[in-house]
Length: 111
Length: 115
Image (tube, rainbow over all chains, first blue to last red; front, side, top):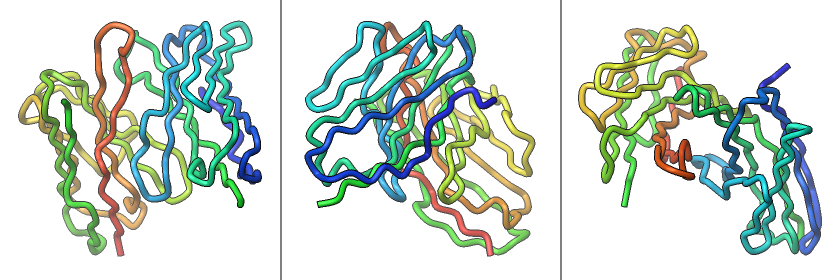
């Protein structure tokens, strides 16, 4: 079983729709969680951290469920510019190498 | 503010040729540094990480090597490239304080094609 698993998609949704991704992780000792966005042929960029209490940044909401070991990303009122691959990242403070990236979920927003 | 540089941006090399990719970070000291490779349409594969000068940990056996000759410089090398070395090479560094611990930031990457 992979340490971090994501549905690869692609998710193809109309502009204005709400879309949600989940990401599951296997290491219960994981301590910090992030969502990154990667545009085609570009480097990943940090989208948002994920906190236990849940957090929101504009149209984006991230949630963490430690009991079930998953994190989620919700995008409301999706824009064409949201088309990208979304990577979930799970870290453990115990080792500098324990930064695990999911393989990403591709999102395509259609007009 | 911190900045991470990588060069070259693109590279086409013949099989069997050597490789040297460089990454430098500005605006921070003693960062943790990482090399990743991303094959076309695939996820990120961690190749090497370094917590300090001369300290390199290898995550995956490769025909690649890494060195950290200075605090903010990280170099990825190969003596003889293979076709399978083609990919998008990304250097990254981590912020390591407080609640921002282990946030990772990436350089612009080097797209390597081995022919």
